[in-house]
Image 1 (cartoon, one colour):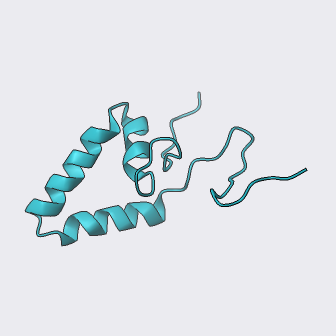
Image 2 (cartoon, one colour; image 1 turned 90 degrees about the vertical axis):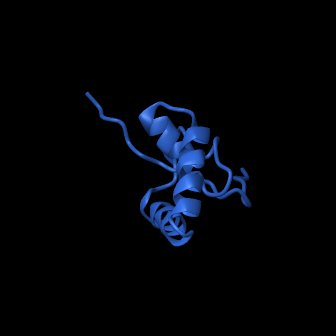
Length: 79
């Protein structure tokens, strides 16, 4: 049995895919994660929410393509 892995989403991203990846991992809508992050940011005097997002962006790897490769959005493969 293979467990779930946490990745930054390529499909459901707005900034870096952290909330989309968390939504996929927990099986909930990424907009709920985004709203929770906004609440943490504004009621936590901005710094905690921003720090949580930056740390998550640095620690959570980006989702790979089906073939296991990662392609940057600015580049494409040419044959």
